[in-house]
Length: 165
Image 1 (cartoon, rainbow, N blue to C red):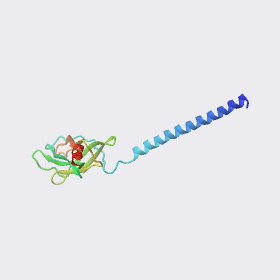
Image 2: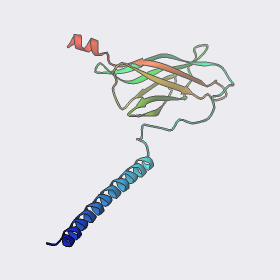
Image 3: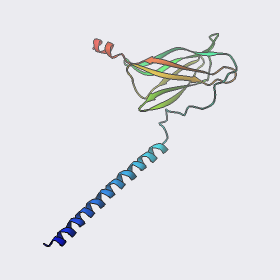
Image 4: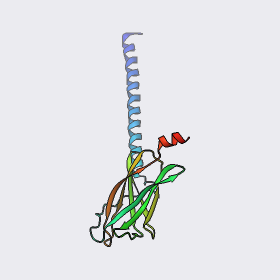
């Protein structure tokens, strides 16, 4: 084989390898773009809602969140419950209580409606250990002022579970 033929053969292989590399890079870029586009257009799971961006009501009587505690299922924290009451202890009924927490890399919000006793409960799509900070928000309705409160809700206590097992 002459030097000229060897050179052309090497160029042909290098050209094919470069073309294959360019195709692979383009496929990766297009796949990434498709995944980002699809994931950003999918609706959130049905238990997550968008936190309203309306300001808290400043008129009406003051309210407070009372008796905030974890909801336990088989010894593992699986949600949050509590009461929304006025300063005089009267229940705030039919109120939307928004709960925001950090889950799987982003902040998630769920909403619970208070019953005739001002009681609300929400089950989260996970169990947790340690302490989960939850932001509770009631926007108010003019009759009652809005309130925003961050609470730290204890989850499963691993040390206690290890001792009991």
